[in-house]
Amino acid sequence: MGLRLGLLSTARINEQLVGGARLVDEVDVVAVASRDLSRASEQAAALGVERALGSYEELLEDPDVDAVYISLPNSMHVEWSIRALEAGKHVLCEKPLARSVEPVERAFDAASAAGRVLAEGFMWRHHPQADRLVELLPRVGELRVVRAQFSFALDADTLGAAGNIRLSGELEGGALMDVGCYCVSAARLVAGDPVAVTGQQVTGGAGVDVRFTGTLSFPGDVLGHFDCGVDTADRSELEVVGSEGALLLSDPFHAAEPVIDVWPADGSPERVEVERDNPYACELRDFAAAVAGERTPRLGREDAMGQARTIAALYESAASGARVTG
Ligand SMILES: NC(=O)c1ccc[n+]([C@@H]2O[C@H](COP(=O)([O-])OP(=O)(O)OC[C@H]3O[C@@H](n4cnc5c(N)ncnc54)[C@H](OP(=O)(O)O)[C@@H]3O)[C@@H](O)[C@H]2O)c1
Image 1: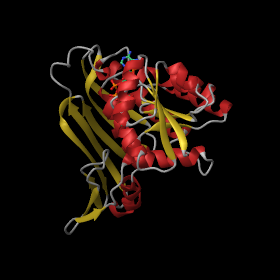
Image 2 (image 1 turned 90 degrees about the horizontal axis):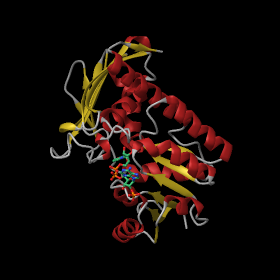
Image 3 (image 1 turned 180 degrees about the vertical axis):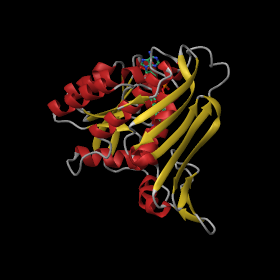
Image 4 (image 1 turned 90 degrees about the vertical axis):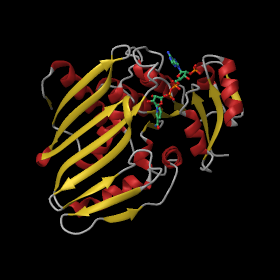
């Protein structure tokens, strides 16, 4: 038996996570908990999970569960991460952990106090494509610009209402929280933490950003820009441009077709094929290794703090119209 993982909620994303877990010997998904037992039972049957529980509390009290996967709406991530850590569980919490720094600090303080692992679930960072991207960075020469895009279109009937967690202000939805955070994660992987940002948003749903564009200034005069949306046609792309060439990823975040095009300043592009893997399986292998004490999780406190700091600054800029530094 591997790490015994419980799912906290019956979110749609659980299906992907469980699909990844089936490929990982070190992890067994043993339970799913819902506010409503019938929903938990239905998902347990659909995903082949052994046990269904009728409350989140029961999952945290379950001695046969070592770790929990938190797939709740964004506004509940930190509260339930802390509750799980205090109950002695390791926590893999879906992205984004929070939209400001202070709750992230509290969550990691709780992890330290409990001696348990806490990781933020940016699965794309665990796929071999992200490692290959970092390895190829020297090919662009001196880094100049990072550009990222991630958008998709929610059902038109859902837009304008809060039927989807992504459109609820109360649940901390929004395009930046949902998909823009991947663009931020990608820019930070390549260029480090920004020193200044600007943001612009279009508001919809129940008071959330349905589209967001941002600019990021990094040390060394490196610039970044991104856009994201939940009311815009499907696309995701990442481009890293330097003094001598560029790298282009046309499926950076799901990595279903993992290839990196290397564009030298002179000459024809070279296509670098990357091994296929399931990003959720990659994420779970990292999490299980961290729980086993073999290494620290790839995405620990420092990364989560950088994410939250940048997202908070982007929202502050979008609200005030001013460039936010520091
Ligand atoms: N890494 C990825 O690839 C990826 C992809 C998609 C989503 N995500 C993240 O995963 C999380 C879940 O997203 P999702 O689209 O899968 O969510 P979802 O299908 O809308 O499910 C959210 C779940 O949260 C529970 N919940 C508790 N309080 C709720 C409330 N007030 N309103 C609505 N649901 C509530 C519900 O479970 P019960 O009713 O059973 O308690 C519900 O099934 C988000 O943080 C999102 O950013 C990550």
